[in-house]
Length: 386
Image (cartoon, rainbow, N blue to C red):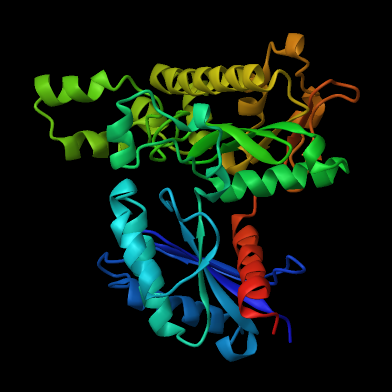
């Protein structure tokens, strides 16, 4: 029987799931349970977990026949100390609850999902895999905010970085695609989805990343603002009479591309632009401008980049974003082959001309597989290999 891992990503109103063979990378099944708590849907996360099992059974996958050896859980924030894939026990749950204020929108539903899954599958090891892990050892100059040092130490304020599972997986896949040692490459990875982040990676280790204490910093995103002057927060609190909670909600849920252009789906955004919608045009221009700023900054950090890779929903599928993000950078060794860039594809592919100093790639991310493999690694290292 194949050894498989059930990967769960629990949000406040959804549970995404996948069953994979970590060794072969084969996806057995996947899906999502949405609108948890809404009328007409499942009432809570316990019911959502039952819905996951029912969905698997409906596709012919009985739990007892799947060969499950572990359950892997995506946890967005591990704080300063939790960065290795870790077998879940009561003590870990308590530590996750302690650091929940660092990610109040993401960690509480992840913890709830873990607690529900442990009750539903008590005989399997559950492993927490942290989005912040890859960036744990960022150079201090990159990880440190220029605020009062004692205050930062007391309240654990630093740049943590997120989407780490994706950035690590994609950077490793880029080296494999090029058939060169990971240790020899300087890379920029652009994870462009509803959430968006960029990293600079040297020899397989990150030296910079755009997200910070929270997943709100950095690039313009679907509904998140990315970088703003901190003074905006105080101004809105003082002059507009907005509460801290109102401002946080606005910056997380009513900003970014949606806040400017009214759309979150880039396909719709492009259609609006083509119809002459000036707000959509501005939203796109701001998105690209911020993206180009970060690419330029990271080229400066690295000196030069051997590889620039686009990944996630927008990065993998939007040729216009890739074109506009990299246009005019030939002086830095960065250029695209227009035909290759415009050609759709679902597999890893090169979109730069042969002989270009910087290779530009599109590589599909697979965070679920990366989590499954992290779980398998924990089993081999700590719990034995069978």
